Structures are given as structure tokens and as C-alpha cells.
Amino acid sequence: MTTSDGSVLGRTTIVDRGSPAECWNLVFLGDGYTSTQLAQYATDVNNAASVLLNTPPFNGRRAVINVFRVDVSSTDSGADDPVACGGSGAVRRTYFDATFCTNGIQRLLTVDAATALAVAGAQVPEFDAVLVIVNSTVYGGSGGAVGVFSLAGNATEIAIHELGHTAFGLADEYMYYRGCGSGETDRDHHPPVEPVEPNVTIASTRAGLKWRDLILSSTPVPTMSNPDCAQCDSRPSPVPTGTVGAFEGAHYAHCGAYRPEYGCKLLTLGTPFCAVCQRRIRQVLPTTVPHVRELRVAQAVKLVRGAGLVPKLVGPQQHGSWVWQQSPKAGAIVASGSTVTMRLRSGPIP
Ligand SMILES: [Zn+2]
Image (cartoon, rainbow, N blue to C red; front, side):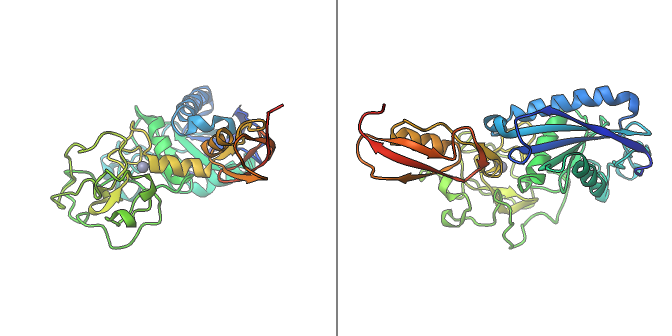
């Protein structure tokens, strides 16, 4: 229930891609693992990290992601599971005090976030995001200051979804709060206030959409409108998977809020992040500068843009121009959106 119910045993670097000052640093913590269960905890962390690093867009930025595991033992195994939400009534003495049924919602699994942040900061001062694995097979998770997830069947999917909130400021794209078919009556219409997150909006016109640059002119806007705001819209998508548009039903409302694609990991676990969420993640993660010296301008610009960087050409550009010098140098880890300066020459490449 408190930090007297366990110990912090130290940190292990499980993926080392370079200086924590330059890379994006993910820290795993564990709650409800007894000292004899820490080998299982290490396996659980490895599995979660592997799934994350193979998930787009993280797989394209593996070169800049460090992963750390902080070992924390708890007196008891598991998490609190209050009967008020239909749980088992279990009360467990754990270091971060994990509990289901936060705010009366069974799947809302939370921990003492202040303690989790303090432990992460003490063990990995350069941390960018913290995920807490709770040693319970009951389904649950939450975002916020730290991401929390249990060991339910698709636990790592919960973790990656929660990371979307915690580290990248993405909103839930759910078109419900308690669930479709729950009988909820307070979710028919979204309040007339624009959410700050990049992946949900109350705008229903093409010009008003935050992600309008990603929508093909042939895609109708709105792309789907909910005909019955008393319920979730359960119809199939009218457009192919991966089409960016405006789909009504998002941000815990049946109507009046839109999401960018029919499907997204912020809506349904096991689904890829939509294009808007992927872009946001790529914008937050650092990136690696590609080698563009002694390449023709068009190819160099394409590589730099593809890495999430902004090309700046210096010198006369004509047919046959090539990159003579670049800065920062190839292989450097920089913030996404940084400028890569390319000094040009013309004529044959030596
Ligand atoms: Zn999304």
C-alpha cells in the first residue's frame, strides 16, 4: 500500500542506443511483483519492449530509443481489486499501491504516480516516459503522468495505447465512456469545446480539421456521420482501411467529435496507430540524421524529409547540384523537425 511495502533494487539498461541526453528514454517499473517474481518481471518487460519496438512508428525510430528496467519488489503479489467494481476484493501490499476500479471503473488500473515518477527520476534522470507493469492478469490500464497496464492477454497493447496518452499527448478516440451498449445517456453529444489533443476534434469541415493536410481531396468530409447520437455508430467503414478523413464518434462522445481514421490504437487495441497519431509520435521522438553528402539534391532532400527533418539548401542550386557538406553530420541524433543544412556544389561528384 505504500513504499514500506517493498524496495527499489536498481536499474538495468535493456536497450542501449546511445547517450540518454540525446535518445528517447523509456523506463519500465513493476508493481505487485514479490522478490521471487523479479525474473518473471524481467521477462514481462522484455516482451513489452519488444512489441513496442516492432510497432509503427516506433520501429522506424528504434535507433533513438533506450529502454531501462527498474527492479522494484513488493511485499505481496498482484493489485487491489475492489468489490465495488465487481472485483475479487483483493487487497495487496505493493510498492506503488496499484488498484483497479479507480473512479468506480473496473478497467481503470492506477498506481501512486508521484512515487513512480520519483523512482524513475532517481534511477534514470533523463527519462522521457514511464510505464508501470502491474502483476495481475485482470484487464486494466491507465494513462496520465505514467502509463499503467496489467498482464491481461493483450497487456502490451494496453501499454502502447497508454504510452500514446502519457508520452505523446494523444486523446482516447473512443466514441463512448462506459461502453457501447452500456446505456450511457450523457455521451450523446461532445461539449462544444475543441480538445487540445492532435487526434480528435469537434470540427466537421475540411478546412477546420487539424489533420486536413493528410486528407485526400477525393475523401468526403465528414467521412462518416453517426445517424443515432443515442448510440455508438457500429457500421463498417465506407472507405478502405487507412483512409484519413473525419469519422464521427470520438473523445468519449457518440456525436459531435471526430477521429482521423475509422480505426486506431487509441480506439481499439490491436489496431495500428492512425496516420495522425503516428505523425505526432514521430514529431516527439528524436531522429537520426541520414547521410546525404555527395548525393544529388533531390535524393538528399527526400532522405532528410523522410527522417522528419527540414532540409536547408545553401549555395547555387542548378541541374546537377550535389551536397558537398552537411550539418549536423550523418548519424547524429537530433530532435524531429531540426534543420539539416546542405551546402551545394555542381558538376561531377568526386
Ligand atoms: Zn489515432
